[in-house]
Length: 65
Image (cartoon, rainbow, N blue to C red; front, side, top):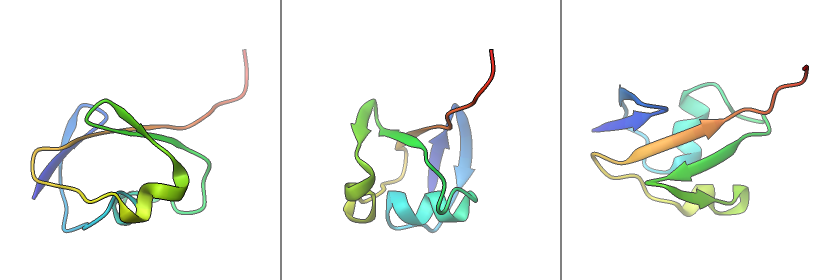
């Protein structure tokens, strides 16, 4: 299926948002996520099912100024 990740199309077989984050290399990192514009808590990512055409936003906190 194709999902949009941070504005770019991405082909995936991930069933859940957590699976997608692992696929993208974010496993174990502190990130904020949204699915189709709605914030998804870290504790709910494993049960958040992805569908073809979904829009996912992943935000990584950065330090600096």
